[in-house]
Length: 117
Length: 116
View 1 (tube, one colour):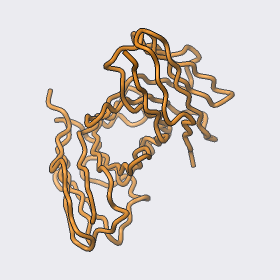
View 2 (tube, helix red, strand yellow):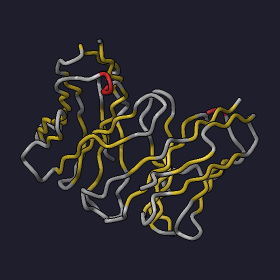
View 3 (tube, one colour):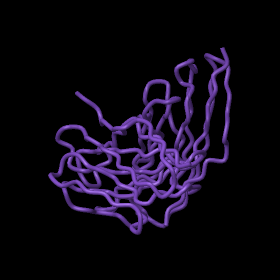
C-alpha cells in the first residue's frame, strides 16, 4: 500500500514570495491533515479536511495561508506571501476518517522542508 | 485547550538496555486517546503505540510499553532491549475523543540516542 506522498521535499524561497505544497493521501482515506513543524517543536495542526470539507482551520493564518482539497483526494497548501517565520517542515497526514475510533491512525508523509530567506 | 509536555529534550541509552521517556498532559476531557510517535532523522513520523483513556490496562507493542497514570495525567513510554534503529525523535500526542476534534496535539519531543 502506497503511503502519503508529498512534494516537493525541499523548497527555498525569498520572503514575500509565494509557495505551494502538494499532498496525496493514502487511497480511501477520507480525512487529511496539514501540520506545521517548526524546528525544535512538535507538529501543530493547520487545517483538517473531511473529504473536501474543512473540519478545523482555527490555527491557519488565513491572511497568508490557504488550502484546498477540491475532489476529496489530494490537497494543496499555499503560502502567499511567505514570512521568515514560515520556515518549517509541513507535514501532511491522512486517516480513514472513522471519527473518534482510536484505531483511526494518522499516517504521515515525509514532509516538505521550507526555508524562507 | 489541551497541552502536552515532554520535559526531556534528549535522552541516551546503551544498546540492549531499557529507557523511559516521560510525558504529561493537561485536559478537562474524560474521553481521549494518547499516542507515542517516532520520527527518525529525515524520515516520516510513524505510530509506536496508542492508549485509550478509558482502558486501565497499559498498552504494549513488542518492546514498547506505556505507563498510563490517568489521575496524574502521565503517559510514559518504556523501550526495552534498545536497538540502534530506535534512535529518533519521540513525540507524545493527545487526541480528543470528541467527534470533529481528531487533531493530534504534540509535545516538543525527546531525542533518543542509542549508544552502541
